Image (tube, rainbow, N blue to C red; front, side, top):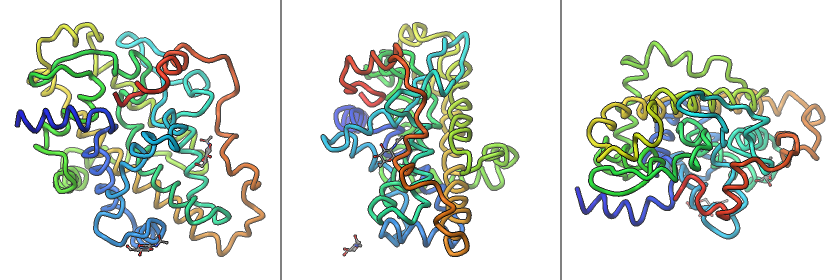
Length: 333
Ligand SMILES: *[C@@H]1O[C@H](CO)[C@@H](O)[C@H](O)[C@H]1NC(C)=O
Ligand SMILES: *[C@@H]1O[C@H](CO)[C@@H](O)[C@H](O)[C@H]1NC(C)=O
């Protein structure tokens, strides 16, 4: 176990949000709830008919952002809510979404792009890959929080290792729950959570996870998802504040035991929402192409998503902090 964790620290911590494990688990859960029509559309778009067609690309966005060609996409993985945890938690799109975009505007942009047949197959493939990732990211509470760069700058100890709160939520606590970080681990965790959604502890709440979700008002929907996760920063992630966590000798076992149920809840929500979202894109956009003329769609000039960006404004404190770090330290490191 110790050597496994060490491996994780040196190789995974710097690269992955919700970790490969978390994103692949969200993807496997979503696969379970796609309609047959949506599934075959997605398999065609992704050119993958394997039983891991969403899980295989669930961390593409993290790999891409780490390349020179993909650096522009780094701000799209989070929204820097400039609230004041643990006293007050809230998300305000106009205040918190960076001028270059955020996870909320990105979900709106790629929702529009995934369903629009005027774009190329490569564009639509990219849009689906980004959606699978970002609908996962937005459920991770620390992806919806500006404080200390989403907890990246909150030093803590977990199972004897010195790391930061963000990477523990993304990667190390999920891996501790499951005992590994492979696709097989993700599939097995997904199956556990699917059972909870269908007939277990989550069955009575699942309807509320997607209530009001609408691809026609994607910004509103994604802002609600961000607000829902952000509220947990005050109630679960750091109810006594960040300093109390840094002062804790080890987050295992007491803190871990207190939050792992919330991590499972958020992963389950992400998968269930993603499936419903892709099903909606399929039925409301893709399948309707035959009956609704393209002329009724948004003008082609809107397909770059600029209308989803917040009103231009002076850079916020959070944006300046990230810019100063050249986005090197943006919720991943
Ligand atoms: C689809 O995948 C197959 C192999 O898995 C590959 O040979 C083919 O070139 C791919 N097609 C596209 C359009 O990428
Ligand atoms: C929408 O997606 C395209 C293609 O990835 C990208 O060039 C554009 O900047 C995105 N717009 C927003 C608002 O994120």
